[in-house]
Image (tube, rainbow, N blue to C red; front, side):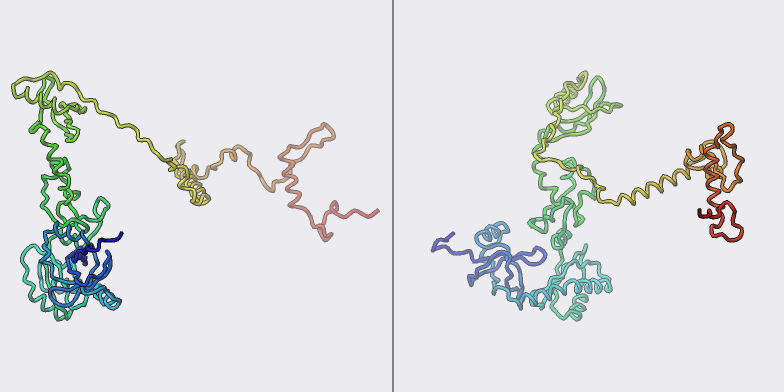
Length: 423
C-alpha cells in the first residue's frame, strides 16, 4: 500500500538483546528496517552493541506509552545494519559467555561470596561484559571485580537481579507447556500471595504453585479479579447448616455455578444446594429455627456426549504388528515349560517322581517299546489261521533289519541270503 506523501515514519525503533532485554533507539538516518534484522547500536558507556529489531513504526509509540517512556528521553542511536564482520565478532563474543560465567563462579566460590552468577552478557565489540547475579543480602564484590578484570581483560559491570528476573533471562517451558510469560511478554512483576490460590479453591501445594523461579506463579493473578467478583455473591462463614436431621457440613463450593455441597455426619452423599437456599437456611439458623432438612436438592445437568466430527481410527491397527512373532512364540513356550516344571506335586509324592513324569499324557498310555528283544515264537497261520500280533510283527521286522548278514558272500554269511543261481 502506498503511503501518503506527507507521512513521516516514526523515528524510534525498539531493539531486543539477549535475555529479553529491550531498549529504544533513534533511527535518524531513516534506515529501512524490518523485524528480526541485526543492527549496530550505540551504548551508554562507549563502543557498540548488536541486537535484533523487535518493533518498528507506530507500534513503537504504543510500546513507549505502555512502558511510560518519553520521546525526549531516547538519545541512543542506530549506526547501521550489521555487516558480516560485525556478526562474526558478535558471535565470537557470545561463544565466550558460557566459559566466562563458569570461571566467574569459581572465583566467587574461592572468595566465599554468598552470591550466584546466573548469566553473562558480552557487548557486541567484546570490550565489556555485564554479570547478572542473585543474592539474598548485600555482597562486597570489589575483590571479585579485580580478579575478573585481570582474568578476562575487559570492563566489568555487576548487576543484581531478582529470582523472577533471573527466570526471565534464562527462559524455559512452564508446567502449562508454553514458554514462560516472564521471558516473552510479561514486564511488570506484581506480588503474588497465597490468598490468590485460596480464592480460586486451589490446593496449597507449593510444588505445583511455584514456578521455575521458586516463587509463586505469576499466572495466579490473571483470573483473580474474576473470582473476586464472583465471590461477592457467595455467603460467608457457612461451615455448617443446622437442621432437624443433623448439622450439615460444607464440603465444596462451585463459585461460577453458585452451588454449595453439604453432607451429614456418617453419610457419604453430598447434597448440592443453590446459594439462595443456603442463605435462607442461614437466616433461619440465626433466628434459632432449624428446618427439617436441607430442602430441595438441585438436579445437576449431565454432560452431553461429545459428538466427534472425525473418525476415530485408534485401535484399528495392532500395536504389536511389527513385533517378531516367532521370538514371542518361543518365549511363550519356554515360559509354559518352566511353569510346568515349577508346578507343585498335588498327589503328595516326592519331587523326583514329579520331574521324571512325562509331560505328555498320551505317551504314558502306550506300552513301552523293548528294542533288540528276542523274538517270541510265532504261531503258524496254516493250521488254525492264527496271525501274529501287529506290535510283535513290527518288532520282528526291525530286528531282522538290524541283524541282516553281509550280502557280500564272505565268511559267516547265511545260506538263506545267498544269491539265487541263474536259470
